[in-house]
Length: 355
Image (cartoon, rainbow, N blue to C red; front, side):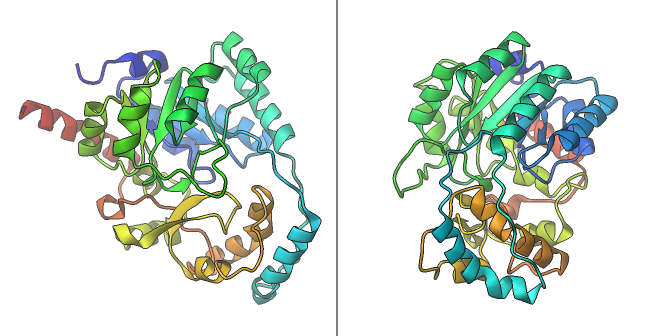
């Protein structure tokens, strides 16, 4: 059967489909629906504090007894440069004034939050833990393996994939440049962000690692799943397709923006968070591209712009907030997550009958 391979066996799922973490946009109903339909639902916990994550895990476990995962941001080695932050705050002052916002206090607590999340995953026996923005330290990986947690890493290049396997990841997501939201890159490439497309990245990663590889980036339907498997991937990770589902926590502003966009409307930028991410082009990106300094590192820039983005979104202003989306918005259809899963599986089955 096309859906039975090393990936589905390791994850204990029926179909080789992972719902991407999509931090801030997942809900227990979305996660449990994907898992109930035979895929791997994933809690996007990148921004969660311990209490929020604990509640989400318990709610997912109440809704399903099928495997699911938690997606975490690996803490970054950020540079806290006061002069740089002051310069950015001065630039952002007009935006804050427009929304009557106070200047935020930067609070870098990534390490504490990450360690608490790892403890909760072990405590509640979450079967899968997915990582982006890097690879955890050896001690963390060892703790999770001793708790029989399956580990999924993210790579945007072959070198990153090799590092993921070397560290002990059981599965590697090869994230092509078409993917929406934050890039999972972590090796230092200077000022250049590796922008390798999914079709180019997947077979090269497959040829250089021995663990199952999952394709991500621009995949929205059964054609993308079949194409990925032909390239050597054992499954796919889909984000934007599920981002606009009825169960997603994404705002109607974002969902409608995606549904009204075309493939040429997205760009990769780090002006919102300090880390490269793909989203729909807007005025904030244009204006921030005129900034006469260096963008602060993630998560500092993310905190500096957070209240502006939230206020703009609440005001229905898509020009001043992030609009994460992959490069295949024309393939997006708003429907229940279960229907998206069923449609992808049906499309693959029909295509295979014709072969």
